[in-house]
Length: 274
Length: 91
Image (cartoon, rainbow over all chains, first blue to last red; front, top):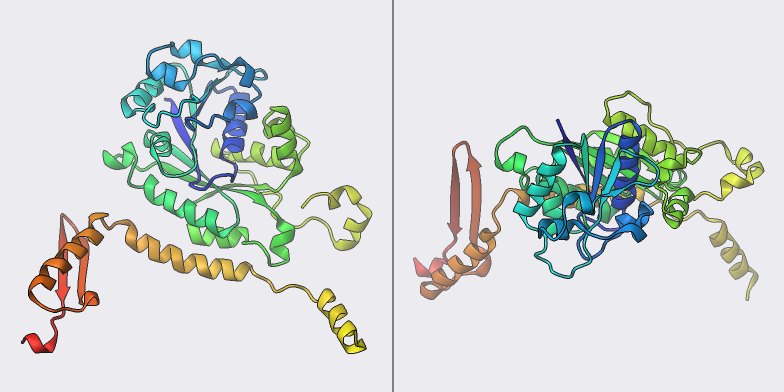
C-alpha cells in the first residue's frame, strides 16, 4: 500500500525542501521505492537541492497536461536507484495544477511506488492545498520561532479539515512535528523557544529535531541532500527521523548543549557552530 | 567622558541581555488559543454580521458594537445566535 507524505509548514524558508529531499533519500535508502514531487509551481527548487537541475526535461505540469508521460518526466536520482524526482514546472500559470491532474499522477505513481513525498510550497494557496489533499501522513516542519510556530498551527487546522481524508470522513492523517534549525545553545541561553515549549503549543508527536548546522548549506551548495552527509549532525538527525517514521524507537539527539564552556574553548571546531 | 559614565558603559557591556524566549511562548499561547477558537467558524460570519448590522441600523439607531453573531456547532446541527442590544430610547 503506497503511503503519501506531505512536507508542509505554512511559512517559507523553514526547511521543507531540505526535509523533502533528505526524507526521500532516507526512505529510498531503506529499500522503499520512493518518488518525491515538487509542488512549488513557478518556483522550482527541489531539483537544485537533489542535484538534478540539469536533467529536467519534462515536469509535473507537462504530465498533468498530457504533454509528456510520467515515465518521461520522472528523473532517476544520481545516488539511489529506487528514488525518482518529479520536478515542478516553472510556469507562472496559477491554475496549472488541478485536483484531477494531481489525483491522476498520484494514482499512477501508487501502482509502483511505496512512498510518495510531496514537497509543499509555502503559503496556503492551491499548490499547498493540493500537496496535502491526498496525504496519509504530514510532516510539519517548524523553526523554534514565533511566526513559524503560528503558521504550523494554522497548517494543522487545514490538515484536519481540507484533506481528502477529512472531507470523506476517513481516519485522519498522521501528523508529525519536525523541529528544524534548533540551537540547544541559544535555548540554554533563554533566547530560543525550547523543544518542550514548541511541543506544548503544537501538541503533535515529535518526529525529530534537526540542529542548526553548517552541513545544510554545504549540502545545498553541492546538490547532495544533507542526509547523505553521515558525519554531520543534521545528516544523522535526518537518518534518525526517517527511522522513527518507519516505527523504530530511536532516542532524540542534538537537543542538549554539548560539553561545558571549558571544553568548548579547547575545541575550536565546535565554536564554529551556531 | 566622566569616569562614572565609563564604568556604566563597561557594566552595560558585561550585562547579559534579557532572556526573551518566555515572551515568545506566552505570546504564542495567547494568539494560537484565539486562532484555534476561530478555526471552526465559517468565513461568512463577519460578512453576515456586517449585513445584519446594516439592516438593523436602517430602522433603529444602534451601536456598531451592539450586534453579536455567533455560530455554535452541536451534534448534527448548528446554532446561529444573534444578539442585538437596542438603545433604551427606542423602547
